[in-house]
Length: 204
Image (cartoon, rainbow, N blue to C red; front, side, top):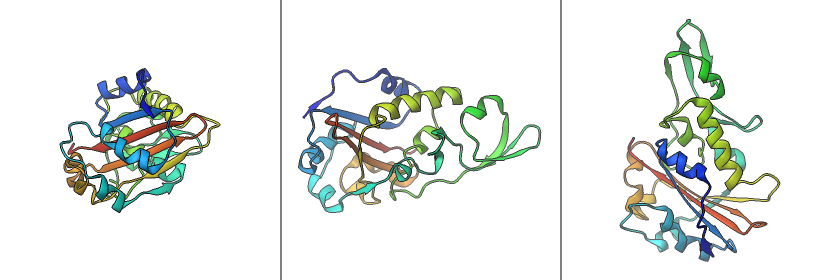
């Protein structure tokens, strides 16, 4: 197994737009846990600690596409959602609007749920808030990244390592456990022998 040298440009654009998830992609991977866990630190930027034994003890679980994407995504249409209830400048109330519809809307107030920290899933949440760009641009970026890590027509295995105890694994997760959340996924595509590690933790 070796790191992918030339990452698609979408990942660089995601970072420049303010994205807080970290990605590490490997090729020629067999997908075994004993191969995956030692590689996880490569996605934990700025971490100074990592306890592989503790991570293995916490374990992981196989999740569906629906669980992986979470409440900020419509699985049928592939659209990012701004989950919640919002009032527009003309006084209308909208609920769970798609991102592409927000280009032409002027929202003046609203409320949104926040995922429970460390309970897993909710990958789309990291695209629903905090990125700088038009909503339609964010949707297009999301599509590019998803098409790479979850290629259409390929069997995939999505493992969720998220846990409220991840700060015991690495100090990388200490900030997120207080507010924004902690995320750790591994996505394996056996037909391509491609492994993607996705990690996230921030206070903002």
